[in-house]
Amino acid sequence: MFNIESILQSPKDKGPLQHGEGQYKDASGNTYPITHGVADFLLEVDEFVHAEDHLGEVMDEGHPDHVMQQWNESKDHFWNQFLEQEKELKGKTVLYIGSGLDEAFMRFADQHVSLINVDVAEKLLEQLKEKGAEHCIRADISTLPFVDGSVDYIVMIDLLHHFATRSMDPTTKELVRVLKPGGKMYIQEINRFGLFRLPIAWAPLFILNRLRGLKGLYKKDYHRPESYEAPISTTTVKRSLRKAAAIEFKTISTPQYPEVNSIFLFIWKLVRHVPFVQKYCGYHWYLVATRKS
Image 1 (cartoon, rainbow, N blue to C red):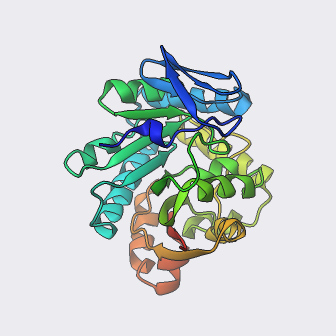
Image 2 (cartoon, one colour; image 1 turned 90 degrees about the horizontal axis):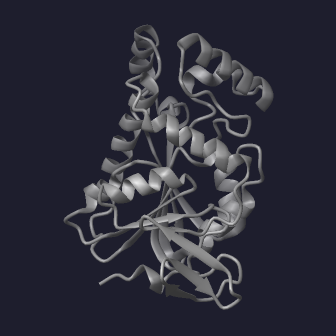
């Protein structure tokens, strides 16, 4: 039976942890509290964490708008593809980074898979735990509290674009560190070069975010992009992953193009089967990255 403590380590001294009453403790005396079943390994609560916590609160309000619909549709497509690609999951460990309120654990209820939910938003993790998720860890993607080569799969959905203004190399290096040789990352991201984003895809980040913010005001979105986030390209992510380790890549096309009106949706359906459009210009890109043994 899987014991999460067998793969946990201190994010500070990288050593083993002792499980005490309501906390973990490392050899250096650093403590990490466990609140409502959620172990908190977050080393710093900065502006990024506050912004993500706020997003979590907004998501929790359950607005029935196209943004929530987009996220839900994209997640359904993502997990269906994951389960179609990976047939032998029994006994495997899946690290779901940026899980939010996604009840992905329900998809693995009968498959004997150890799913570990990781996020910086404490409230979301506590609610996920209440819904029945077994493993919920609060941690930053750049300092994951797991030993080297300890997980079979890493899953990230619409997460890496939150690092658009920072160097991605420390993040990808950390991801590769915890992935087993032969392990896989399944990554879905908002595509910078989506078909209807092409006219502004080359704009500097501050202009891009300003345009997206104005669009949010026009459509009365409850969430507008933070200054640190923006759609990214597969090239950016692949380049960073290659620096971290020897990686093989596979791209899966995404047929949906949410968040557009009926005219643009009609255009998308006309052109989406063109090989170039299908591979490079979807609303999302979907990448499978395998760490070579």
